[in-house]
Length: 115
Image 1 (cartoon, rainbow, N blue to C red):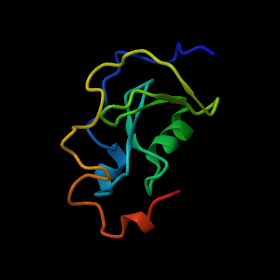
Image 2 (tube, helix red, strand yellow):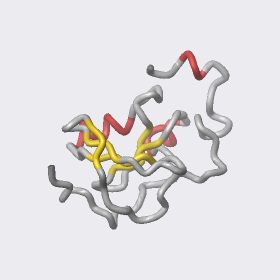
Image 3 (cartoon, helix red, strand yellow):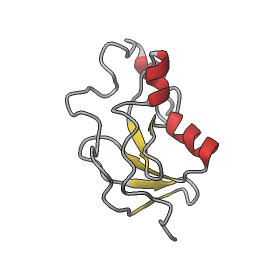
């Protein structure tokens, strides 16, 4: 397996999911495209924007954008992979709740997630 498509210099597109932020949505966890830096929400989140990004772009490698997590996911191999250190920041702000962002998560969020 080769990871040549990972760009360690690509900076994150923001602190939260771009698409959710654009429409006032919310997420459970965040993922960072290791090829271009796009931040999208995880597959547990209602909108699943990280996977949609893979489907639209073919960018196969995502890294967790959660504090304390450093794992990479390969959508093509459907498995975890080891990857290089990426440009900072490595995660969403630690002060942000999960799910988040604060003020946009509905009270019944557990009924709205994908399991």
